[in-house]
Length: 175
Image 1 (tube, rainbow, N blue to C red):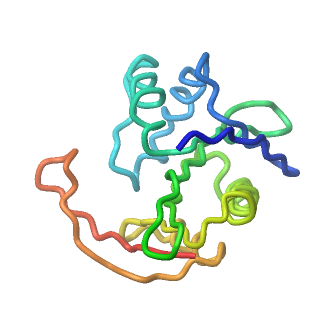
Image 2: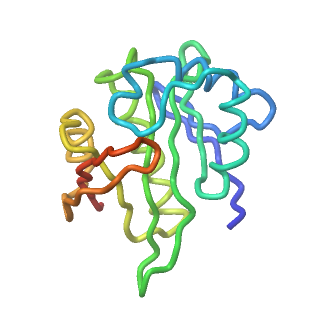
Image 3: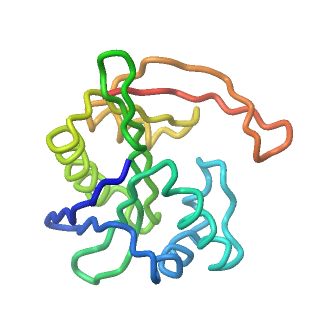
């Protein structure tokens, strides 16, 4: 699915499509935040080149990607990813995932980013259902999803392939 992604503007943030020229450097800097990796399966990247490989190679196969830019400074502070919508029965569904540097947690940046993305996804793309997963114990993300209107629909244990003998309890939500 090839969609020209719009720029979405709020009071605190600008969500703009991934820039294939230099966003990998800005994203590498964001991903140096250790706290951001506590509740996700990936490790802190060791080089901008490592980020370039997944940001421009792997991610676009699965996601529409917006960089979260702090409006006041123009700095990249996070990322919103929506999986390419797929037809499942009579519903058009997509997945929702995001990352935000911990300096911006609990300050309204993610709330505003979600509102902008959800307005676009539901109004323009006509998605019927969004899904998101949260690891057990990630209370802040669970609360954030609850506040965004998500409802818990499923809990399961899943082996996580990137780490040997690592099982995570996934809480799956839908909105």
